[in-house]
Image (cartoon, rainbow, N blue to C red):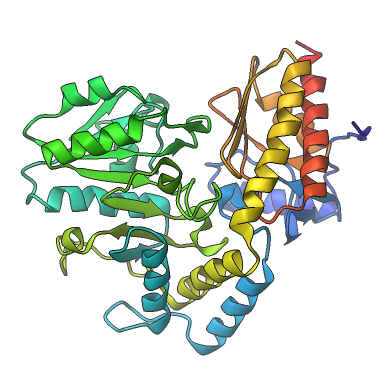
Length: 408
């Protein structure tokens, strides 16, 4: 492994001025690193002082094609010059084409467009209730799942830490242990209308569904006439090496929610469902002012075409295997690494100690990563990351983990 120099990022005068402006004018609801990012290209990003970083968590998972992918940039530039926004009371050609491309690559059906994952999940919650005119309003969700920050989606999120100070939660959500089909069976009653699950827990620590679990949920949903909703906000759009993660498990949902990488960094979200179910989202019952706007649609179309034109689904499998080989090698020689989980460009490294110091140690090595669930290092690399960048990233991450492990 190459020796990598490390030092805390320098806070220059430009960055300090930006920090001072934020301190005065921006609500402090985010924990921010003292770094001002100004430019990105692929898996590289630069700060205001000119320092270069390797980004293995680009855009919190939104930049699946890296920073500023050229085909998406061109599509957005061309669209901005023609039409920026019109409301959904008019037909917008790019929106229809975008819906067609998504439909043909998933399970058919129709799309509702919005701006984010939490909005997509709100639409799914409404759809479950509207299907029975509110008579079957309960939705079963799972411990470790994460579905967004609005009151409906946070209520669906079975992680108490996200509920603190926000109670009471929206009624109707029942939580089951992830992977426990018997618990799901016990929760179903005559008021249950749906099941909402991430095929791969993202915020929950990059945990794939256990073998047979999604198939079991499909069976339960069919037996009790429930809508099976897959939240693919983090795991969809090609991240696992298939267009959608449920295709890895050979299970088809009734409803799927998407966002994050859907538009390669531009804000956009979507709900996909069957024609039969789509009719319940009738006019006046749900809407999104900016949903499916021309810019998001242009970016979404360009992202799909770039993935196919450049063979990136196939590339994901090769990059994932390289990550797996390198990280398993690290696990074998470092007792502090408990487990390595790789599903395409969705990677979790479970540690035997707190992961926050590893994030800081990585930053000192100009590597951007994330920690979730306290001790899981989460990587969501760009699906077009080069093999040399995988090697470089693993070198820097290994150095950071070994550094912190040595202090335990």
